[in-house]
Image (cartoon, rainbow, N blue to C red; front, side, top):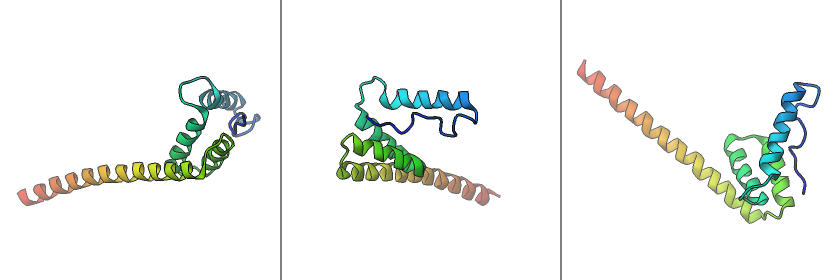
Length: 111
């Protein structure tokens, strides 16, 4: 099966040992043994790539997922899962902002 992360991302001439190590790690993560089937690993990677907004990651993992049989429906669902996770983070951080606002207002009222 194809795998888009088998080469050092910056090429072998730049920090070659580090790049080769990263490529080997990526290969182990995406094609090595484990309980999560390869297609699902790629779908998870798409969701993470959508949240980190890495265009190359989106392309590479989508190519690999489709080659492993992922459907457009699965990719659409992964998109909504990623959107829900991002919005959840915004809400939690909004709650923190509201807490800061309340403490600041109390502080201002006390002086």
